[in-house]
Image 1 (spheres, rainbow, N blue to C red):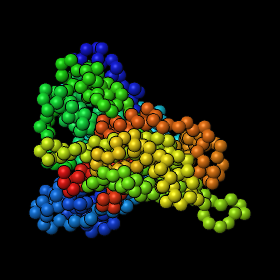
Image 2 (image 1 turned 45 degrees about the vertical axis):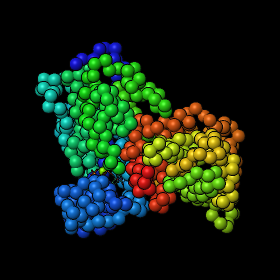
Image 3 (image 1 turned 90 degrees about the vertical axis):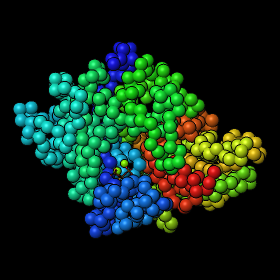
Image 4 (image 1 turned 60 degrees about the vertical axis):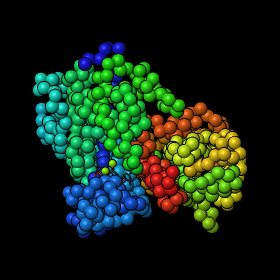
Length: 597
Ligand code: DCP
Ligand code: MG
Ligand code: MG
């Protein structure tokens, strides 16, 4: 069915970017195999708690699956080698190393990680530069320049075809397929060759295979990559037009997906969409910790629903805490349009949070005690992750001084209250988090102060007031979780080696920007003082809206599986381990389940 003009017009894409999405094959298993290559040829599974978080492809050939119970896996394949993966250090390190390797190819530093094993790279600048260099009369022996400065650095390739697979939906006839955008085709071809080059580099230099998608947006590149797994790559080929719908390869490709599979439409949104489409609550498999099979409603089902419009979707999807303009965003996503940028690399995490879950936490004294110990760990974490050694100036000796390289501006307290008992004595479980934010006080940055003193003061002056806003009653509440986070990180710039050798210009311009609020400071000892010109963002509308949207799970990138990896360090005190953010929701459900209702 053709959409009316009025609805399609806002769907003009911005200038096409070329984006590559990497997904490392069976990531945790590959990390373990890299340490012990003998394991490559046997079925290998990585265990966390009672489940297999991932397994190698040898194990998959034996019928094992990701997120399967250990007991079931052993039954299906008694010879499986199981390696414990509770300690995430090795995975985090491997992830950072691979990320830095990919980043070293980038000119614009738009290289973004999702979870531990996915990376997007915006290669628009590299592709466009190289399109200019093409000899249109002899595309088959082209040269891809990997550096603007050194014309000899690069590789030869055949620009007349794609590297790897190209995806063209079968519904598009040859005739329609010819109606393609030549320029976009050329650019995507170049993108596919660069993707192949980096993919092979990762394989040969680092020993990791990956699955890659190439398209014009984050979402399309991520989705199309899935078509050839593992160790493959797929380019979504033009035509990319939105109109007419029956000759768009993008729409044809998107239409077949279950709406829940579209990144950016998380489980909450997809449930509301399913409910809207079916006209009733969808059947849900509540018994499954990791989200069960639900009734399949496809993107095509939704997209062609009579009367569908951004306004209508807004009505269906907006609720407390929902993202502004959610209807328009989802409407665009259903049409395969996603203008979200690949976020530029940074040297400090975006936020740090520490949390603990409780079977019972229902007195103010306990709450204060828990907030204090959590704060202590948080400040300790900040000192590790957000400072670097400050080289002593001439003539100075003695103990090593450190300086802050990232300064979060916001302090956030999140709790998850248990619902009161039902009449029949049962308790309805809820995963709903509530939060309040305030400006992070400057004394937290005082490196000379003892951790205990900072934690005490932080609770008294900042967290307790937030707590009272969340839970005004003296008693009557019972919390199953407390989380203290610092967010709104301002990157103060680093002098470390990690940042050396990168595009100097982009680094300088970035530093200028981020340093602006801190120009009154000159040395590390003064960093304990909050900048004079900093406005208090206590009760700031954006911070709270953000926190609440997060609490409701209605954010463009669903937290369950689509988060910012250890950009958000999440420490679960219940099992004493750091958890990558993508696994947080699943992990906390795991504890809930074991604690019982
Ligand atoms: N992971 C986890 N908990 C989850 C999901 C994933 O610990 N709930 C870990 C294990 C994986 C890594 O994160 O190795 C990436 O997960 P993916 O689901 O992307 O899967 P893999 O990379 O393991 O496999 P594939 O080859 O299918 O990409
Ligand atoms: Mg992945
Ligand atoms: Mg993977």
